[in-house]
Amino acid sequence: MSKFIAYTVVLISVLSSTAGASHRQVDFPELVHTSHCILDGRVEDILAWADDEGLVHTEVTFEVIDLIHATPAARALTGPRITLRFLGGTTEDMTLHVSGTPAFTEGE
Image (cartoon, rainbow, N blue to C red):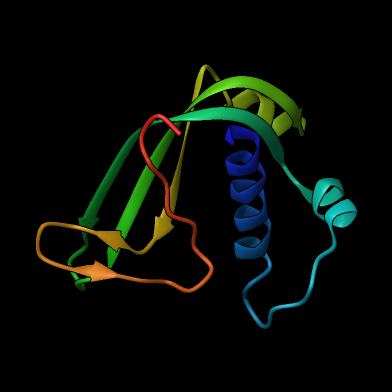
């Protein structure tokens, strides 16, 4: 299950970095080739908050179990934990659902 999460995170990272103008279909080999980081990890913490404009953001912190692949820049930024930020999530007051964004559970 944690490998699925890591691959999902990588997919989101790749898609979000190419999402400026349009979306295009990416196959798995291309996804792996263009990924900055692929890891096996466990969700340690989830923190959601609303910014000044009312948009909900979520930070998900992963314990890195195995760093499967990383570019030199990503390797330098990846320690025993990595935190990724996503648009969307749920606070006490509101929920913002962003299509295609995965949901995470602590311990997963």
